[in-house]
Length: 287
Image 1 (tube, rainbow, N blue to C red):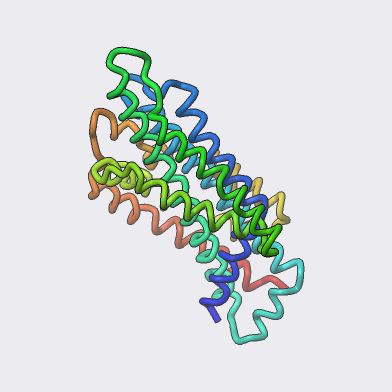
Image 2 (cartoon, rainbow, N blue to C red):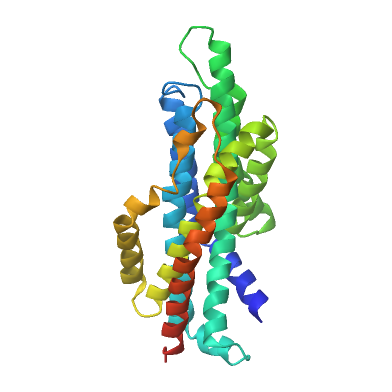
């Protein structure tokens, strides 16, 4: 019964209009920030890297926290929780399955934003190479691909909804991932991808922690209260989160030491475990 809960949670978030709006806003932030600032702060791709990682970081927190809180509160307030528990699923198992489902949905968000960032960074580098002393501009095809990731799924989903009665948000969500994956292979640079993805993956552990924290808060607080608590905790933890946000290590072709990445994951595990454990215990007391 655990796997169906994980799948249902990820599907629920994939059909949530608010979660999709956060995805679109994050894509727009990454694309516009890169395009409007001439794509280089001291070197080609610097602004695109900053914008991409910022969108993954800030947008990912908003996406995961709101999605987790809304998903758990809906189950509790609609009475679905009692129906699920009647099928031999413990409250702890239900809670942990919900967290896993939210994280699975977040990984799709992460993949979309990472693909968009790789396209823009590569486009900034190609644009700078073609400038030959003039003002560097984003390479046209890359910018077109980044814009297509935002607009093409909306158009195609509208057509699918009109003629085939497919659900608009769910279809748009799936198509956004498909278009992003297809577009990134148009101008893929595997060396760049390896360096950027290692740095972006560093944002996964703190996001997992705040998913668990938001879930724990949602067992006792309302939707707004739980979200406010999780975001306030994120603001308080910002000085520590600086250890997970390291775009400058990519400057001038630099890369992140994978040993640091592994240590960061291990260092975050106790915090994730404590938040998940607290949420599971609080869920056990829900009546």
